[in-house]
Image (cartoon, rainbow, N blue to C red; front, side, top):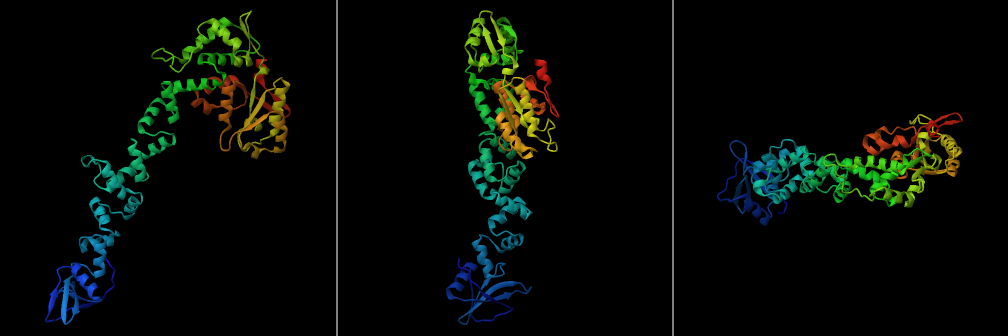
Length: 458
């Protein structure tokens, strides 16, 4: 409808021999447009209220009841925005709503806060409500209008209708849980619940667990601990034996019978308590003493721990100096003070490295936080350290501890650090059960480097 602008003149009385009254504002407005009339008289009633719009035309008077509209422009706006009457039109304008559909919504829903209405609209719930109704059978619709849907969704921590629609289609009834599950790779609420019930941390863990028939988190930890040795090409019972070999005292002769006994004691840790069965994922190759002997003789991974004497039927472990060593770079640089106020020195790591080399160790690596080099007092000595050892930095904003512990798990190597890894022990059973065996404490005092744990092993 074309927007017109009219001139209004309030009058109390107009007398004319010829009076024509229109049937409605629509026809009256059409006549004004057709005849290009822009001057309108507003006739008041006895109470002084505008009762009729009127125009003078060819000596006659044409009029139309205002039906409560103050101007014809207001009437045209009301028609355009689908208001059925002047009362709803002016009430809506006073409340700040432009269209009748918005006004009807807030009236029926009992919304009194305009900011809440704006938030509902911006978050897509007004338009989204039609999608909700289409996706839900009428008799099953839980929400009578967009506002009810909006209130429910916000209470359940959904950020907008788009998220609500996607999440509920996947079975989620809470936005916070949906976002947490999505961040962990879960596509459905059912999978997320299944993983949570079993203690799995991610969708990938759940997928792996289902494929291998892993029962729960504890079972999954045991599986992962042995997976660190998958590069040995050994079965799981063989990897377990390798772990046992890594913990044998140095320079000792251990009979094949003793090894078989140690393995027999370790295997029950993997059995399920309720059924006494071994996990389906646990692969087994040993079927007696001879199979263990064959493995000790032929597997290359065995050689870093010692060698098997077939004639004497014993396994002789190597001296500790033949073991790999990883140094906790940040811990040693701070001389185990472990805070930003303490002074970090490359000299500490160099002194420790030279002490290890003096004791006969040759395979030495350092793993440090990326931020350590920015805190070093003597960073000019970093080049000297890198000539002595393999120096590795963890990625920025990532704890070096994670890589240090993974390295120890894979290599079964010694770890020089005064960090007790208490936090890691609470979340990782392998660390809780094993790290204290591989960890070597130290103390650097002036020019002296003390390694009492190595002195015990000697």
